[in-house]
Amino acid sequence: MSSDPNALYSRKNPFPAELKTNRKLTGEGSEKDTRHFEIVLAGSGLSYEVGDSLGVFPTNNPALVEEILAALKFTGEELAPNPAGEAVPIRQALLKDYILTEPSKQLLEAVSNKDSSATFLKDLLNPDVKAELDKYTWGRGVIDILTEFDAAFTPEEFVKVLRKLQPRLYSIASSQKAVGEEVHLTVAVVRYESHGRKREGVCSSYLADRVGDDGKVPVFVHTAKHFRVPENPDTDIIMVGPGTGIAPFRAFLQERKVAGAKGRNWLFFGDQRSSTDFLYEEEFKGYAADGILTRFDTAFSRDQEYKIYVQHRMAEHAAELYAWLEGGAYFYVCGDANRMAKDVDVALHQAIQTAGGKTEEEAKEYVAKLKTEKRYRRDVY
Image 1 (cartoon, rainbow, N blue to C red):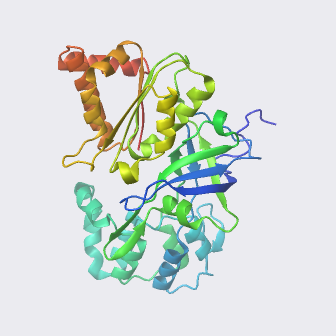
Image 2 (tube, rainbow, N blue to C red):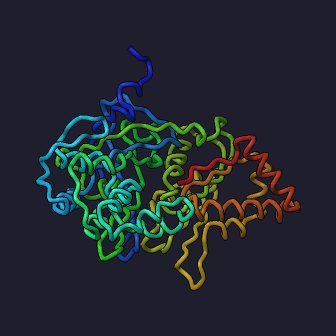
Image 3 (cartoon, helix red, strand yellow):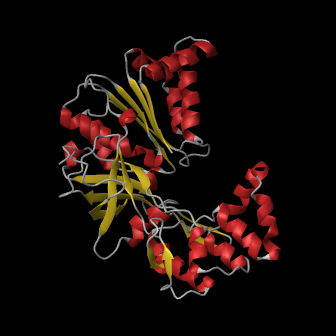
């Protein structure tokens, strides 16, 4: 028998964990629905370190599945292959195995072959016009393609033009040393309207709204060795985690508190409004009062006429930020890769340049050295 405690349950064999807590973190009037989930791992043998992610296998919205079956004129009992090649009722395959929220290129191509009014879809599949394809498919799902065009499929043909539904990875928001056989997540539930329909994120809405009567969620641990707390507990850490990017830093602080780490902790957190979007407010203010959080800087973008983000707070405290880095601090960023992480990276370079009296080139070299020393760590998505 394997000595690896995680060997029994894995991505290929997820553990059916109990969803114990589903609590809304955002307040009345917030534009967001951000939630705190507590999942019980008792009996799984699964263990995790702070910085790891939890993989969650969602199921699709049954109402959406029924719409698709109706559009295809299927009863739902017809057999179709799942991704493993096993024949199952197509309703089951669509619920558990295939992506329905984004039309695949194979679906667009198949529809363009079946409906003469849809030939333009084939033109969009030309790699040279990828931006046009992205624009067309954004906010459209499989149901839109089926209702906009006249294309008949057999059950087997249909599932063959769909992509496999993948698990979602969420940064773990707890330390196992603090919460025992539980794992906590901080998740923004994705909901929006486009093309006259209400849309939702598959996994975030599954956790928020659709975990079955048994309350079980299929999960596995995804190891992220690159995003650990420093091995030496005396090392200072600077954490930048706006929005749900706060998740791993909640875990870091729990871990450092339990371990009695002597290193200082500095947290930058940002969101839209302090009155409705201050995630884990009491908890973090408690850490600040207890001295676990040495510095705590917040940036609420909509609490004043002009937008203030975490990178602006970094600029305000450039001298101290540079002093911490000079003293050996690790710098962590978690959250949105497209904008926030890039803006924070620019702010980091600028802080080093201004506070360290360095040229642009020297600041680049300084940051490169931080990365080489593994003192600049990112968990971005």
